[in-house]
Structures are given as structure tokens and as C-alpha cells.
Length: 263
Image (cartoon, rainbow, N blue to C red):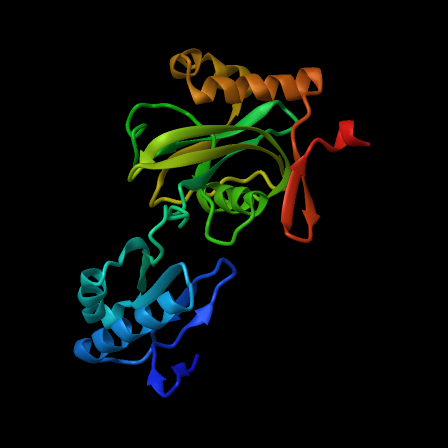
């Protein structure tokens, strides 16, 4: 992105966004004083142009530019491992800048074999560590990863079992679960393609195929817990033809829907 000049005035390199604002992505080293001068000039120009939100993406190597931007009214919007994103609302009106991403997405994989045995694990880490509780493989979906792909990956990583994604049985929403962020947890039905377990020793204490009724009979699963509903859903799927949501590719990604009742 090249620096923009307006009437021989040098501005910060910027491009228009789709909402009447501008985005500045800094890449090359810049002295703090030079940056401050360009920033003030640019803000003046953007104000005259009627711009609204101004976004500045500052890579970690240019952290020296954060302080002068904050002193000019910018605030933190979000950060990743290699950059921080600052934002400023120019008009004297209520800001319509969207908040940072509010949710993270997790998956729980229900893998059931032809013997009505469920693939379960005991974790080495987390709140259930050392409690002897058998649970389904779980994990967080990676950036840019589909729910169905994430579920397949988590099962493979934790147990060595290859699976085929069948459908989403249900999902749970939970607030303030991770640094004040909310959590969406998708319970996924999977079909096993292999059966020999090889645990991931860093995170998993043990794994096995366990009769569904034994999983449901655990004291922890008898309480008002997520595991209780997972076993109830699994039994409903096996015995009463419960129908969940299957993935269907669309131009904007993947939609999960009840295919059986749709057709």
C-alpha cells in the first residue's frame, strides 16, 4: 500500500473500508515523531472528507507507535500474536464501531461404534483432571477452520481415531468463559473410520471405547451437566432417529441444517 498524498500533503498509507472509514496498515519502520506528524495531518484530512472510523494496524515490531496514537484518541480494538489494531471514531456522534469478536467456538465429538460404545477420554489438564470422569473428545476450532473439520481433527489428535462428520446434534452458549468472552460449543455426531486408539500423551490421560449406558451412568453425567445432555442426545439419535444439522457448502461458507426434513 503506497502513501497517499493530497494537495502535496503527505498522509499515512490508507485505504477506504466499506463503512465510510479508512484502514491504515503500517509495515515499514517509522520514527514516533514522524508518525505523530503524519497522523495529525491525516486525521485533519479525513475529518474534512467526512470519514468515520479510522483503523490503524500496528505490527509488533512497530510497538513504539502505539503510545502516540493513543494520545491522539485511539483505543485498543483487538490484538493478535503479531499486531495490535487501534481504532478512533471521528464524528461527534455515537460510534458504530463493532466490538471485538465476542465468542470462541468449541466442539465436542460424539463417536459411537456399532457396539453402542462411545469414544471417551480422561484429560491430563483442565477442571476434570484427576477426577476419573470419562468424557467425549473436545477442543477449540482453529481460525478459518469449519466446525466439521475441527471435530475430525480434535478426535484424531486426542485419540488417533479417524472419523467422518455426520451432523451437529446441538450447541451450547456460555458467557464469560475465556477472558470475559462468550463460548459456543457444538456437539457433533461422528462416524468412526478406525478403531485402534493411540492417545495424545501430552493432553490425554486415557481413552477407550465405553458402553453408552456406562457413560450415562457416571455420577457426573447424572447431574445437570453438558455430559448428561450429550448422552441423552446420543441415545435419542440411536433409538429414536433424532435428526441434527448436517453441513451444506454455500458460497459464503457452510450452512448446517436439517437435511432430512428439508427435502
